[in-house]
Image (cartoon, rainbow, N blue to C red; front, side, top):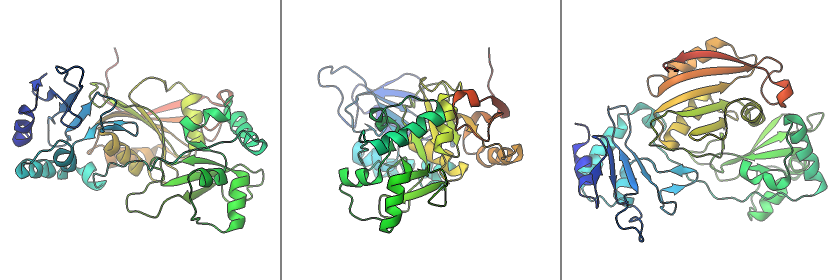
Length: 356
């Protein structure tokens, strides 16, 4: 039996019961559970079936501290076990730490579950912002208004962002700051470490398509990846679907102008923004506690199959990949276009799924 000490700790929780040998239910050890319904079991624990899987936890109360930043619960770490669930037994904590250390993809990612900084996006409905939004709408065939941009973490004006968030320190000289504010559209990275700015000027005035603007002081766990807001059910029996593109506009075109069913649950959509696919995928798996996934890649046209065969070999031993499919756009170099310019071609790298 894996983790006997941890299992024993949970058996002492209020209203403890076993749905089966690996799925446990109880009153929440983090928030205390519902005050109005004292018989409710809101905390679910999924114990691992083998040494490659982490322990997952999830409280179904929206007000529980474990439910924030689009993440419902997550991987159980010794810190959560001791500080939030108030386990005082050192041997149980050490047992969990040893188990997590043996999971390669958690170890390689340092097991860091990130929290957002909580910056505010702010888009005025002025002429300059309207012109930038017109570019985005024309490029992707959208009809968004400035009021729609907050949920997509899009920031049209650099100076408005700095002012509303009271940020004084800047990383670029004034002339570069002015050009970014005038000619670029910004996208807030997954944990508010960066704004990824896209130069939309006709002649690429800044000399490069993308500019990474650091919002915070440098830290060892920062990342440039962009994650489209969504929800994950950790305890769902179905594998979660991760869809990754190189760039954010390509991601938008691929998920809104393709047939990837963006509005169905248990999906994460991300863009590398200069990071490697292995970093993006492992970061998402650690953040959301995913061990069983379907992987979609929205590929640029020049990237050949052998690259993705190698990528699969690099990650397949650490993550249970039920299916890996690479999507190419027959009509353009990537998916960053309106629907009439997209004709998908799907290339299956690996599949263990059975379709009825």
